[in-house]
Every structure is written in C-alpha cells, then in structure tokens.
Image: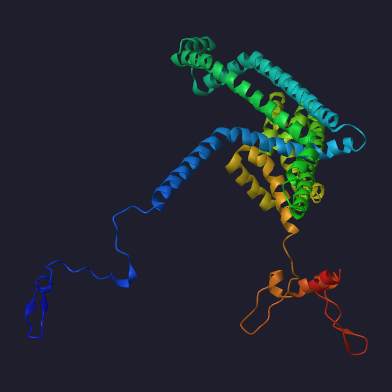
Amino acid sequence: MALNDDTEPVDRHAASPTGTTPPAGPPADGVAAPSGRMPRWLPRAMVLALALVAAFQLGNWAFHQLIGLLINMLIAFFLALAIEPAVSWMAGRGMRRGLATFLVFLGLAVFAAGFVTLLGSMLAGQIVKMIEGFPEYLDALINWVNQKFHTNVRRVDIQEGLLHSDWLQKYVQTGAAGVLDVSTQVLGGLFKLLTVALFSFYFAADGPRLRRALCSVLPPARQAEVLRAWEIAVDKTGGYLYSRGLMALISGIAHYILLEALGVPYAPVLGVWVGLVSQFIPTIGTYLAGALPMLIAFTVDPWYAVWVLIFVVVYQQFENYVLQPKLTAKTVDIHPAVAFGSVIAGTALLGAVGALIAIPAVATLQAFLGAYVKRYAVTDDPRVYGYRSRGPGGSGGPGMFARGRRLREGRVGAGTTGAGTTGAVTTPVDEEESS
C-alpha cells in the first residue's frame, strides 16, 4: 500500500495495468542478489582443505614412526663430525678415506670393548666378593640388633622366612617373565648401535661427496655459507670431544693415583670410569662417576670412601675453575650458563642424546651467527661498568680503588701532559678501536 496526495492508501497491484507484481529494484550497495546456487570455487576449496588435512595427518604419522631413525641419524652425523679431523688428517697423507674411517672406528671399538670387559670383570669380582661375605655381614648385623634391642634373632629364622615368603616367589616369577623383555631391549640396543655406526661411517667416509651433493642444489653464494657452517661444525664438535677426552685422561690419571695409593682394587678401571663418565655425561656425570669408587673403597675401609669423596669434590672445583677454561677456551668458548641451559633444553627435547650434543650444537650456532651479527663500540658510560648515578643531577662513577686500578692498567691516560697541556682521555672503547 502507498499513500497518494490525499493521504489515502493506494494498492500498487491494482495500479499495475496488467495486474502483475512489478519487478523488484536493484539491491542496495550494489550487492548481487543470491541466486541459490553453490559457488564454483567452494567444492575445489573443500577438496583442497581435506587434502591438506590428510597430508598433515600422514606426515605426522610418518614422523612419529621415523623419530627413532631420525635421532639415530642425528647422533651419527655428530659422531661423523667428531672424527672428521682425524679422518681428514689421515686422508691428507695419501690414505683412502674409507680405510681411514675404518681405522678410526676400529680404534674406538677396541677401546670400548676393552673398557667394557675390564669394567664387567671388576663388577663381577665385586659381586662375587659381596656374595661370599654376605653371611658375615648378616651375622654382624644380627648381633648388633640383638645387643641393641635385647632380642634373640637367628640367621636360620631369617633365611627360612625369606624362602617361604610370598613376595620372594612373586619376585622370582616376575623376574623370569622379564628375561624376555631384557633380551628384547638388549637386541634393540645393539641394532641401534649398529645403525648409528653404519650411518656415521658413511657420513665420514663420503663427507666430500655429501657436501658436493648438497652444494649442487644451491647458488654459489649459499654454497659458501653452507661450507663455512660445515667447517665450523667440524671444528666445534671435534674440539669439544677432543677437549673432553683430554680432561677425561687427566681426571682418570689423578683418580687412579689416589685409588692406587689407598690400595683400592681395580684402580686402573675405576680411573677410566671416573674420567669418561664425569666428562661425557653432563650435569650429573661427576656424581655418578664418584659413586662407584666410593662404594668399592668402602668395602676396603669406610674412611677410604670419605677420602675419595673429598678428593672428588676438590678435583671438581680445580677442573671447573682452572683446567676446563684453559682447555675449552679455543674449542667451545661459550658461557657456563648458556652451556647449562643448552644441556637442559637438549635433555627436554631428545633425552640423553640431546644432553650429549647440546653443547657442540650451541657452540656451532654461536660461532656461525657471530659472523653475521654487527657489533659496535660500547659507549663510555659508567653504567656500562656497573656504576649507578648518585642523584638526578649527579654523575656516578667508580670509587677510589676502582679508579686507581684503571689507572694502573693504563685505561685512563694522564689528565695533563707537559706544561699545562691537557692530554686526551683514553677509554676502553678507544683502546678497542685503536687495536
């Protein structure tokens, strides 16, 4: 209905000469009217979205299935980087690279087999000794309990009670059932070790071919960066392992001398154990390394265990503050806090493997990024050296002793030179720029 000039409603259908509904006008804002049909792009978008989701799920499943293989390859790559200097040195003197890699692996295998054999014989001997002396220890404990608490406990009663107890039978049944699981884990560990050794052998023996294959798909500018990063990784990883090996040798010799002087059995094997475990197991390696010598020294004399503990603590401080900074200054020069944080992060990501490779990986990344980070001369501000201003209008600065020390070190030049001639003040920034 519409209104005419006389304000009376007028029927639009009636006003139409044909009696039909007039066509609707165009919609506001130029928006096309809905036609009721699906757009052409919508089916293709739905198919593409489903394909992307399916590809993501397939990739996620494949990644979780291959995560063990990828970790083994990562270990093999860092092991190949570690032995790269030795292989390159032998190959540079005319030896075939494959033969040089084989000789390096053979030396490592012989050392590992000898160490495991000596350690196993030592542990077996100690276990036999403890089993043979167990009745004497048990009689001494029973006598102490009877005297202390006025009881009448006998060893025969304890043995009969243990043999007829339910928990012992359940433990035997559980142990028999777990033999198969232990065997499976041992076989799985041997297979992983073989996989790591095989991949590391190929990475080290075919290192030049691998680098050429990688550089062949990159432009020349990128090739130089990749080769430089590879060289830094070899230097840092090899330097880290070699410096750790040297510190392990020094630590093993020092602990061997102590144990031999105390008369502790198996002193050579225990020295090698302390050196390797304390250096190649981060954070807790020192405590694990010192526990075994203390336990064996305790079987000889309880006071010997105390002396071993004191020596382990003192030597650890000497190593942390004197030996390690000198040996790792040119190989893995990273801050101790950064090293500790990298070990924690590596352990959280990859477990024990991440803890082992975290420090050389962070050192490689730090050395590689150091060439691309632009550095500037530091302003000569007292706050740079840790001195705060004394007030809104005052200027803080070092105290009398600090200024005297800087004057003795030659960091601040004389205020006046000659007859009333004012000299220039030399700051640490000026020294850096002049050098």
